[in-house]
Length: 446
Image 1 (cartoon, rainbow, N blue to C red):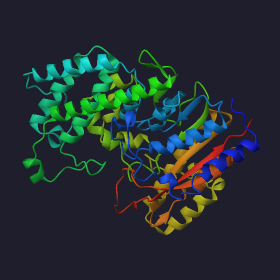
Image 2 (spheres, one colour):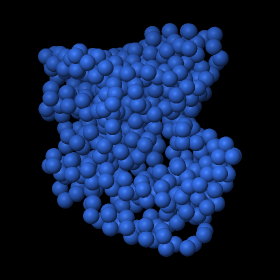
Image 3 (spheres, helix red, strand yellow):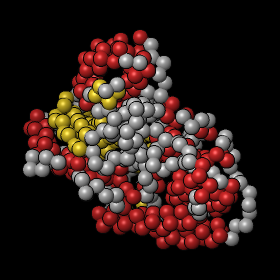
Image 4 (cartoon, rainbow, N blue to C red):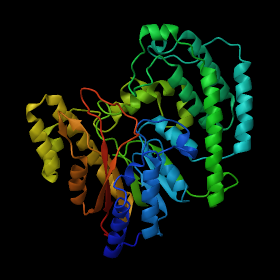
């Protein structure tokens, strides 16, 4: 149970704000935002900078040493998960994207390194001795996205992984296959959206999915090993298994009821609807076609892949059908959102609907999120203020207004310059984001 009192509020705010006093650019971590250990296993779009999560958890745990369990309702690549494990804390996370859940479950272990090295060698031997030329998956436009030779090679990798008995090992290898799919496909890797490469580039391109896969596995074994050693030195593992409790759920934060409350929520939600910001679903679509979905989660059904937009459609703002009943009360609770919509009134209608649908869905997440937090618990939100119609949408102000209506208090707000988040640099909808706001809040004690 979190022990909340005004003196602790001041200590925490002073500590976090004070980190940026001597170095105003402290929170950007420019030149220091490397991804070591578990953070380096896979490049997921718009990942939270590990050093940000680390600094926040360090400060909050120093002020509140009674913190035991961390939550992230938009868990993504599992940055907060890994940093919670690095402190020996329990963790609960949710994400609607099966690829994100796979990545988190790999990061959670177990860390059976010697067994994994042996299994890796056996698996590669199976691939290199597989002379079958069949293609084991089929989906709409497979020929558009993969050459015939890549389809055959990826099928060999898939068959070899499925031959492995241990689920924890298969999950580790599926991540390697996801990387091989990304870099051997005909989709450009310079964007997280699905865009085919120019025909002349496709025709002249030479790539070997098996080599990409092998190198990914070798690299990830090193990252996995260094993560395991770090946690062993911390005393956080026993015989390769993490000592804390970890629960990562595939599902919609709007509808999931927490089984156990957390002491602190640390999260970086999407900063707008996925279709026009970071298309996590499009990014994940091709890898998930080759992965055995039930190895990720029993709820990971093929319906997630019925189109390239399906995962993004299920995400916040994915449905733009906005009714007056959806936003009447919402605008009353957020003057900042109301002001934004008034500005967008003369803009094309889809701009206002994008903003409204996103905040309607985010608002629906807030009651379950608050219910998952202990009375007096902390919330830390890393937020990006995107542009729509040349208007900056004040995500931080809107979220503050919505949460403060529910008895939440803002302790402080930090600002960080973005120097390394992977996202679309510039298009006709979203201008490059250069700063993030970090809101530090506390839930009421009752």
